[in-house]
Length: 466
Image (cartoon, rainbow, N blue to C red; front, side):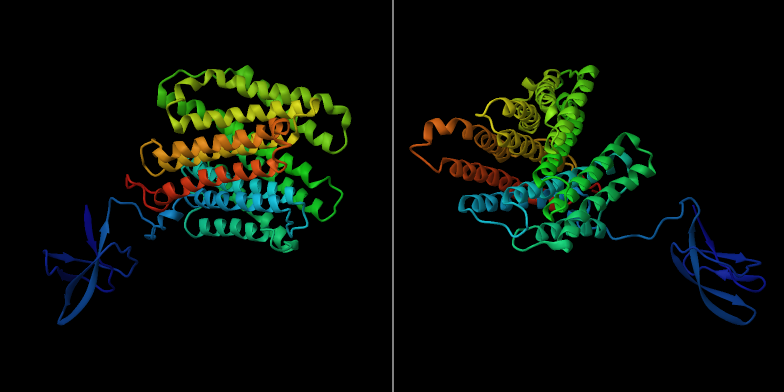
């Protein structure tokens, strides 16, 4: 329904619509118009002609905001740029680290090379994937906007600035530390605003975990500057444990759901087991930090809680229908990644008891195995689902998942079994294994980057925004 309306000072006038009809318009007064369209007409009053504009009013439609130009698809939703930069970073950073390790090079950060490598894999690679996931998931949970267009560009630019500052080519200094530290608070604000606006208290924990990651990163920087806050490695491992907690929370929600939706199997999630898992993982993390600060009396608490956490992680998968996923790459990669968390906790406990098991084995079971496979699997699935595509992996993605699994096995277990077999014949076997695993990792993420570049940079195939 439309009405033609004009406000004009003076008495009665007669208006003539040149292309529609003639009608009298009386007692028009000066006023204000909302423009949805214009129409030229001629107004006659006494002997003088005036040409004015009539305004078309839509009486049924509510006031609409001014039209805004849609952003390029790459900047339409958080997963798009962050999954892409995470994949590129994975392809470049890990081989770069393997080169540094093989040649005994140093990095100009003021940190040890190992601490720098670990920091960049957590606060560079893993955090980019976490950012892409949370910006997308929170938008889905709240139906509000987290970051898109220029704001999303700024967030990505902040992440890139942190990586440049921490590249190891020069001393980051205070400015570099600020750039590196700024990304997590910015991400927390981006997801926190819609969560708060919608009172989505169930997911406030993600903002809290981001806050804890910021504190761990700050402590690492302070330790590198000589502050008496403990060593860099202590807070590096604590940061990794926080990432593990995020993976356990998200994995516990989505892996059973994805499995049930795709295979039809009935999944089980016993409440008592979930509570036990929270208890054991919490004790393991707390005791690890306490041991790092010198509380050696908690050694057996760390051993027991880590072992029980590993058992609980694997036990929770018993009711998830893992067997039904073996022919579905987008599912089995998630199950495998989750299982690696359990393996990592078990190896962490074993490292206290047997010299043949090193703490590095536990760390790489979690990083290469769990973080690598879960991030690659989620990046593949989320990108398909949120661009309107069928949830079916490209054939090459199955190979990427398999290569990453081999990289995790090699990086975790070969250093334990190789000394007895290769020490005499191949003195440099350890460096060789590191380089081999790094190459497989890089190829896996390169496959993702190549296959998903058009997916991440083109509009949704169903025409919906995002």
